[in-house]
Image (cartoon, rainbow, N blue to C red; front, top):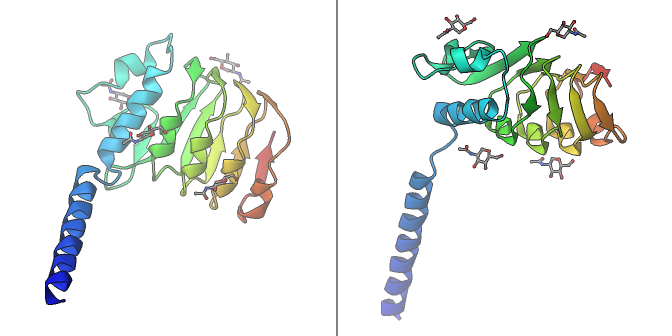
Length: 178
Ligand SMILES: *[C@@H]1O[C@H](CO)[C@@H](O)[C@H](O)[C@H]1NC(C)=O
Ligand SMILES: *[C@@H]1O[C@H](CO)[C@@H](O)[C@H](O)[C@H]1NC(C)=O
Ligand SMILES: *[C@@H]1O[C@H](CO)[C@@H](O)[C@H](O)[C@H]1NC(C)=O
Ligand SMILES: *[C@@H]1O[C@H](CO)[C@@H](O)[C@H](O)[C@H]1NC(C)=O
């Protein structure tokens, strides 16, 4: 009996050790995740004026890149471009910018679908993707952004209904433009 108990305890300890090393192998989201998301964003865009090509370079911290703002821990809180041609689709990796509170890509010729992953930005307050060529439907996942205050998707090629989820769990949503 005592033998079995001890064997079981060893197994539990091994399981705990395995769980710990698994966590160590997948670090929590960090500034490196933010950098990867910004580079993925850049990689999806044609950027005919070379705004990203000339400015978003490894010689400076991404917090000093044009259109990017950060908090004191070097996490991205804002990504904002207006009236510049970026031309491409919006990478789902933007959903990894865990502290993003402002996302403005207004009149930037972005096209294609709105990634579902934007719904996993818990701090997002302003989402302005107006005056573009976005198509497809408005993802119901946007209803998961409980802090959302402004949603501007006007002047796009979006279709379909406004997801009911947007009215259920976004108490601060005071401005919607479609
Ligand atoms: C990138 O743009 C920002 C803001 O316009 C500017 O402050 C910075 O010096 C630029 N960096 C480079 C490498 O051009
Ligand atoms: C969009 O940006 C272009 C410059 O890239 C500008 O000429 C045009 O007036 C802007 N459109 C709107 C609706 O602001
Ligand atoms: C970021 O997002 C993409 C797509 O949503 C995902 O495949 C990737 O594993 C995420 N994590 C990191 C660290 O980039
Ligand atoms: C986000 O929203 C979708 C669709 O409304 C839902 O299926 C999903 O479970 C939600 N995810 C989280 C993490 O709340």
